[in-house]
Length: 625
Image 1 (cartoon, helix red, strand yellow):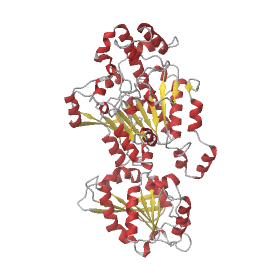
Image 2 (spheres, rainbow, N blue to C red):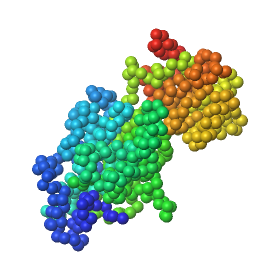
Image 3 (cartoon, rainbow, N blue to C red):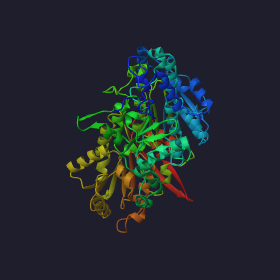
Image 4 (cartoon, one colour):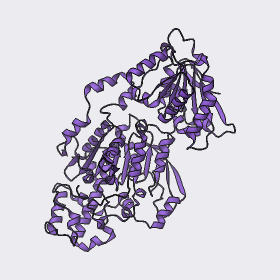
């Protein structure tokens, strides 16, 4: 395994940190070593302005990562009172900034700015619009950020922004190290002072977590465009990368029969087991570098999970994540459709104490890294196309950054469209609110409410062909076991059901051979099948993706019912179970104002809201009772 050496890129024999030590013999004279290394990084093509900028620049990067605290100040950070500020920026929208009120931390209120503080080499080939400039300005504040408004029309603009931010961070880190190398070369005594502590325990500084190989392909292509434009000759192992991360045309053609949003989500290679290390040098971008020799790691949660496992020692080793300074999580909502446990385990392993030293020069390690305070300096950046209480809780739980956090509000325009506005089936839609005061007990309370208040009514023979839509697989297993114990007549479809079995179940359910169908959201996410014959649709919990609601309700139309059993839409029904913790899931479904009304605290334990669709002159309106 190679030692930790954050500037050892072009020549494997050069180890500037170890060779500058007074008690370690050098391969070559120190003067020649450092001079050669400096010339290697800054060739004649480099602008003089860039060199001067490297030596003089002090920005948010410098202020955030080279600020030290005392142990009592860190204790204050854990328990200090938080202050919040609401901002409205013209292009990016409304967000809440939260930080610690203690004066020793960076608690100054954000001011609107178009200053991006980007390195000039990253601005040669791309121009950012106003939205991208504002987002990049927020990222460069080094506060944690959660943006739940990622859509297909802005996804690539967002990807370009966080890619530029990651590269900018790596370039500034390298420049800082090289600058200190020069000073240490001039005066070796500098190495003994804290001013020149500029490294971590391992080299990787940025972790980008993505759901699919296609996402990684797009992200690395963004990096190449920022660094070299359309040229790829400076990218090592690029042909291998394209071969392993692209997709066969036959697989792509099979998805064209699905809805547009499905095609966009699953465009390209959707393998969710991958990891790749990247190292940035002055003149090249290296792909497939060993993790301990990488600047950036791009991986899926499953890929990192399998990487950290050691089958021989039967233990895990995530030492390469011990000095991560920026975590970027894109398409976070899709991880809920994969294995969310991998995300939780990943976050618990980031910036943990390494099991080995990996050849690190401790005289150059930052004090706060040695104190194991990296989690209080690490920036967490999350993007998702929707949100719920689980995603927001995940972000808040891992937001330990002393600079604070930025949380965007997922509000809908009062005159804008919501999922329920897309429903054209004129059947009653009933929302049942149940009382729940504990987030940890919400699953148990929901289950009790369902089996005691909802299920008994639907066991009536008049409610045949009832489908129960279950977002959580754990809830699905619980309901399936309960139905078996109670000998309730039902089918079940989940992500583990074989395609042939699914076809049989769909046919039998359409012919009403069994009363209930248990159906998981994860199966619908990956297959988007049309279940024919649904007469009563029960949402055990509001769907993560609001458009699934209108899609499933509209699938109850007359053409999918068959001639024998169809009467009229008034004899059909849609039922939704929710509590106040489902507020964020209801926003895209009903709109901000109606969601607040449904989730407002009331004296009664249970509330029922009825929505009806009135179609008048091809215009749908919603009435709430």
